[in-house]
Image 1 (cartoon, helix red, strand yellow):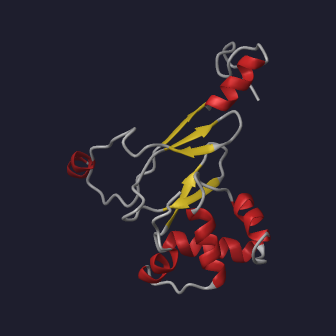
Image 2: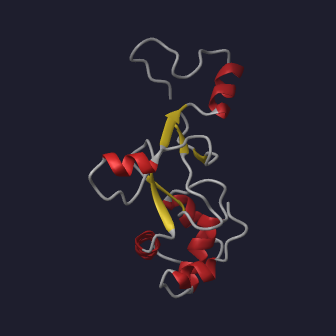
Length: 162
């Protein structure tokens, strides 16, 4: 969540006008404490302004194209949307729970990459770096323990907990 961001200014400085739909979607994403799926964004929009699903996807594509929103891959082969790096919102890794499907933002300092070394050793232009850790979140672990079962991910080989 980025309380310091001026969403109208970020839209305008990226070259986009601030239409009601763009601004509302950008604010929903920016005011969330974790990356959101399209259904979550659509649900939040229902309470404010009506936007059909095609328009929602077009606006999300536009916000990603203008690099003010990041499209983040999730372990369930879907995407989540969060604020792109800006002066008030540093680039950071994410954690995806393979048990419940939740995604959360991690502290930017929790994982560091040496981009200078990577740039000098990898002969290409790096446009985006996305770091996602997959595992079992603390809520799922707590629920599993309270039911008296084994922790998710600690079963027999090949066993999948859902």
